[in-house]
Every structure is written in structure tokens, then in C-alpha cells.
Image (cartoon, rainbow, N blue to C red; front, side, top):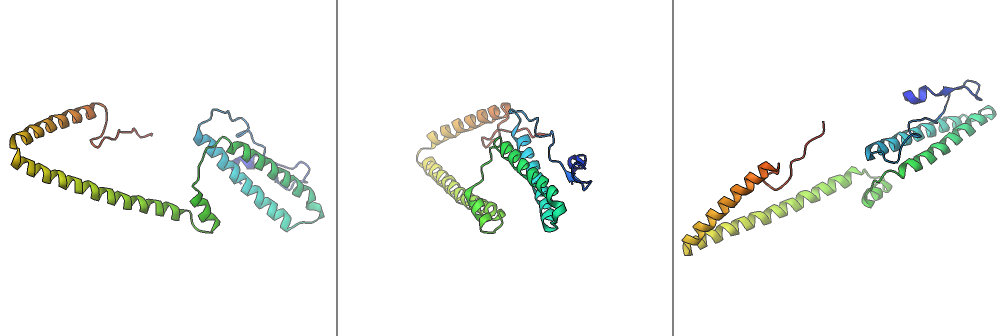
Length: 190
């Protein structure tokens, strides 16, 4: 039981058996302009409350007798209310889960397998791309060697132009916080 639930323990209509009220103000005061992280946290909190309510419901049902009918109904109503709240909160979240992950979960497998497979696929594609890049670098080097033998003056002027363009590009990248590979530096949040 978390601290928000502990403060809402009540004895109304239950003879002091410690029913937990799920009506809290933390999700009721949410504005439509909340950031996605806050919306996701609200949904996660609602899921946790729902799991707690399901556990309480399980305990009530497993030890059911005539005297526990009112607590059972109250817990069912709380569960329905929290599920409704969760549905409303989830409308503000835009999370897309790949179907492959859902299929893995349905098959009883670990969704981390999907992540591992995607990463392995990216590594394989990266190696293929690196191989192609290295092949083009080798071709460029070979062509420059052949051109230098046939046209030495033109190759020298080409190299001067490339050197000045590279120096200008490096100077521009440093002034705009762009990395040498063309990526932009991103400031990390503290």
C-alpha cells in the first residue's frame, strides 16, 4: 500500500476493516496540456492501483462469506471506477507498441527478445553498410591513384579544393555545434 492509499483508509460502512478508497485528487486535477511523461506516469500509477484493487478483490473473494458482501461490492465498484479512470488517462498517452511485441507477449515469451532481435538486425545492417563504405573508400583511393598517374596537375588542384572545403566545413561545424560526421550536438538534460 503506498502513502496516498494509506492516508485514505476509512471505516465507513465496513465496520473498520480498512477498505481503501481509490478516489484521489492526483489524477482528477490533470490538465489537457500535461506533458507526455506526466501522462504516462499517471497511467502507470492507475495500473498499479488497479493491480492493488485486483489483489484486494482476490483476497475478498477467496475468503467470501455473507458478511463480506458489502466490502466485495465496494471493491468491485472501486475497480470499475479505477478502470474507467485508467481508460480516460490512457487517451492522453500516445504510445505505440509494435505488434511483434504484443505477439511475443501473447505467445508467453519475453518482449526483450524483440529488442534483442531488432538490435541484432541493426548491427548486421550496420556491418553491411560499413563494408560498402569501406569498399567505396578503397575504390576512391584506387581511382585517385590511377588519376594521379594520368593527370597529376588536376589531381593536385582537386586535393587542394577538397582540403579547403574540408577546413571550411570543419570551421562551420564548430561554430554551429555540429559534429564532424554531420550530427548535431545535443545538450543533455540534468
